[in-house]
Image 1 (cartoon, rainbow, N blue to C red):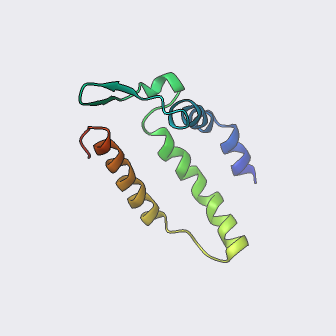
Image 2: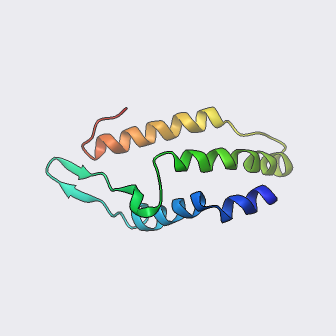
Length: 99
């Protein structure tokens, strides 16, 4: 419980929420010739490593909830692979080049 409270109160989690609210949910993309301009995520108090750090903090919380509610674990490796594919597909769709 304390881990969850610490995570919710953390600046990293707040930065992710602000980014989600301002960028993802409201589609604040800046079109340019041949694609879109990548937003400066620093304006949201975020770095490119912040979401991964927040997810890493979520791992023990999600695992504990899964064990308690479903008596099962979570396939984090598959989750990472699926997210990487989604991000690469999005970047390609926006006219960029995937990693």
